[in-house]
Image (cartoon, rainbow over all chains, first blue to last red; front, side, top):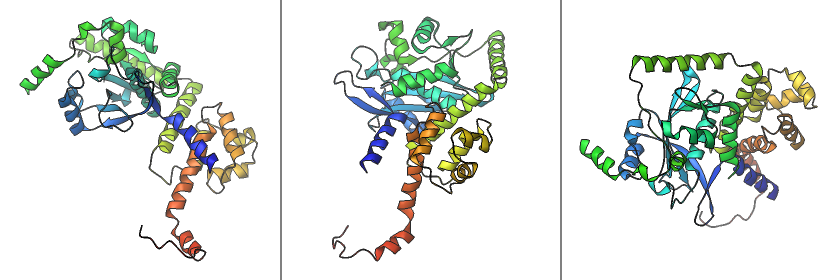
Length: 172
Length: 183
């Protein structure tokens, strides 16, 4: 029995991610869960996030939650493009209380980008994820996440997407 | 609706307070729609190139992508509360072998079991030993850890023990003096 328990504990580290509370150093179990229309409206009304999330209802919206607390700390909107073998990140936001100084949890955007990469492997797109960056931020996405610049999009695929998954799922 | 939008704008974050690096750490901003014909053509050109590149991947790259797809599907399955009879150890093993475009006999040789034993594993007629799942981890160079294979087997066992009424009836005759407490 102890052997089985030990193996199960190990397994948990394989498939979940954690976020670290910057104040306490405590690790929290984090999950990315799809959000449906009614909840998107509720989250939008809460004003805990920037941007108009109602407009994302026709796309796949996900939330990053910790310890099964319903209130998300991050939101992500993805457009699946099966004909192009790609997933496009349309919008991503950390909750207002987790933006820079005073933030409680770190690396929220990275975790959600890594999630998008994982979805792009699962869909059979070779981990291809793209986004249209604000011009002024392009170099930061390239430096931080290893995106490659094309004229219109920043892209990640293959080994770089795998690296992001390892970095944000396995290196907590 | 307009009122709500205005209210949201008023209470939104003042992004100018943050450095570009801080913004990239927290957001991917909504992009502008392609409006001119030139922009739309450029975007279509981008996607056309993407499709061509994907469809002309090398066979090695294609195999790598398909194995990673299987890895994450397996991880999601073992991490979920759902049980699906089809998603057995044999199913995932068969996928692992066939996505490498290997014959069963060839793969059996690579992990040092007989083709007959491999066939029993693939058809779920025999439970794999610990040694075999370790070999699968080593064969995949760590992409499919032994613990993932173990968990698939364990999931089947959990389902079996949860649903085996016949065994409960059979074992009932071996149990005496049961707790007389409501539960």
